[in-house]
Image (tube, rainbow, N blue to C red; front, side):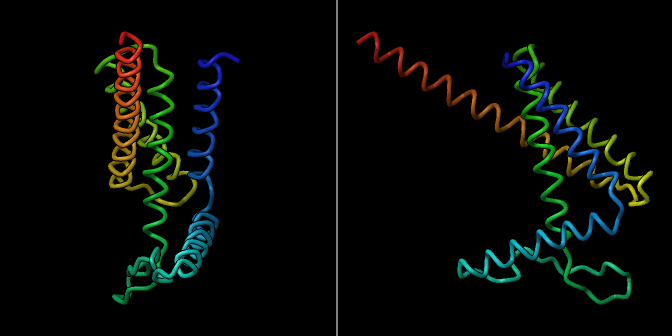
Length: 165
């Protein structure tokens, strides 16, 4: 398979993952986040770290008393999935330079906006703050691609310099 085809398939799968999770009910989404939090906390404890390392304390039910929450896990998931989506988009785009960076970042952020609209229909609620978190993930994806491109160019130039000697 060609590189562009593989990247296109990965982009589609990434969108299905992102938007599929947004269509889950509030209860199912919370169960997945809570289960992941528990597993990460167990792993942290086994490694000699705090066994509540991934637990946030938040007043989720509005009674003024903070309860254990997987809030951190949910927000980290937003950053991660949008970093991956945007990196795939950056790699798939055929344009170069700053235009590529801007298009990938804008595309990742737009998908984040659509993600929040989808959540309105799954009765989970939509938050503008989450679009900002998705945009931070998109920026991270572009930054990682730029770092990788810089590292590859540096490695290539060192190899070429060695070959000339």
